[in-house]
Length: 85
Length: 217
Image 1 (cartoon, helix red, strand yellow):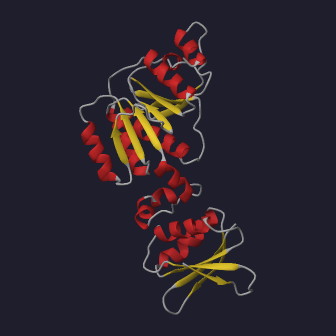
Image 2 (image 1 turned 90 degrees about the vertical axis):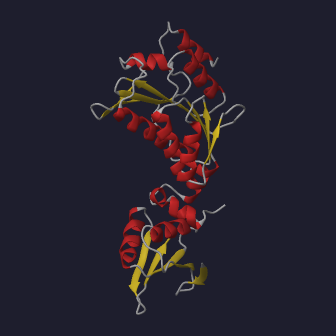
Image 3 (image 1 turned 60 degrees about the vertical axis):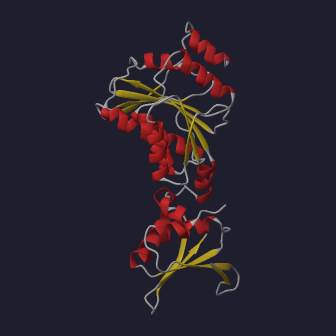
């Protein structure tokens, strides 16, 4: 896992590469990572399993976390930005 | 210590739940449960506890099939260690499946309460099981059975077996993981009818065992 600054530079972002993982592990690993983060911090999750691009945001909203964005990339991956509530 | 990748995979089905955090799973992995009694409901309870990731399970009571149960639990989850005997142990949780609603059960309940340990008792009656998490001032197990209008039995009912063991394991797992204390009212599970209800039993003034339990003897 890596760290970077957000586009605005005001918040720190963690990067979580979950390429090669499938559900439910993509959601569980994202959830466990968010648990270690401070409120307001952002987590950028990369997945290459299409159902995870839908299930992670849906499940994160259910457990009360904020979904900032979901974007499909040209290389067949999805980038999901989550913010710790 | 953070969960390993194989542990995340093993416990994913409970880690998906909102309140079941990694810290809760780590609590479970460090916890020690003492189980009294024997029989199929207890076996199932032990296997469910093992699957949930309880670190150490101590079996108190002589039973011929203990090695078989230890092997089955180890095969199910290598994180879980099942031990024979619990003498001198300081457990985090006590589950009592012993077929005893008399003085022995009252003494075990009093001992656990005196030590500040959570004590969950499963009472078996014909076609039904009663599960109760004891606290100070509660009636003795015999009076809880009486309040339900049930008589203790050694007869096993397949439905009751399949319900009471996993239910006891679920109660213990959630409490050990810090996800709440189960109801202190007795939970009556009627396996024949597939029905559940709560019983509010009170100590009887003339019951010696209720008095002993209240005194913590």
